[in-house]
Length: 357
Image (cartoon, helix red, strand yellow):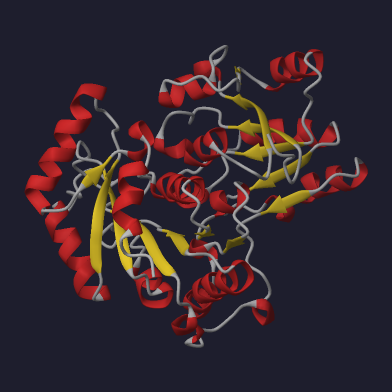
């Protein structure tokens, strides 16, 4: 493993691991270049392997019941972390009151604390005083930069002449970011240079070099920040492919993401993530998910670009149901469908390669 950017980290995900509210922790457990994840906090899965819980594949990251158990085990193993990372991603991005005790313990041990929630830890005087006393750092990843550091849309996106793909979804908390990373890594494995453009706090936490946090950015600058990230990735890395992480979905009532990505990122094609067993929008019972063909038409009308393929989120499905579900999607939409998390992305990469300039 390459040396991580910020060293060893313990991920706080109490009460949320293996649920939609734990998607930041899930991303970090599956992949991150920013940290070396040495454990996850959630008593519901204490003693289990985090990779086995999530994907049925062990990855050597243990789940602990609490801070005391984690510190004891990690100290004995010579793996004490430098950071506590908040792996929660609840609706509204609020910090549960009970999490503060673990954060205080981390700061008292001199650990850094990183959080991607909307409740800014740096606004809490007790926590900032503890950080100052113990000479450690608190970072609020969702804290917007000063306005003079933000970018307005310029049209420079039209100069980007590599293939641009947007991984959008039919709902929020659907695995768009995970699929985007899988595609980037599969391109690189195939000898095709590719860059990820992150649009949320978790992508930054995973080490995306070109990113912005869309849901906390001031509206006037969202398009400009997306454009700036894509243009910077193209100018600095000269990739053959840029993959843009989607946010929310066009029709989700609380997270209607994707408009700015289509308008400002100006992808050449869209990969659409979909969960066949999901009937209602995430967190909103009674709000029926719009049919997949309707969502595809909406994307294509808004962007004037084609949805190239559908990627499957296999939540609530057995492995035996996955391939028939892909076949059913193809029959319904006329588009190829893939489960890249379960089976890898080689077949999808082969399809996309035909469109690389």
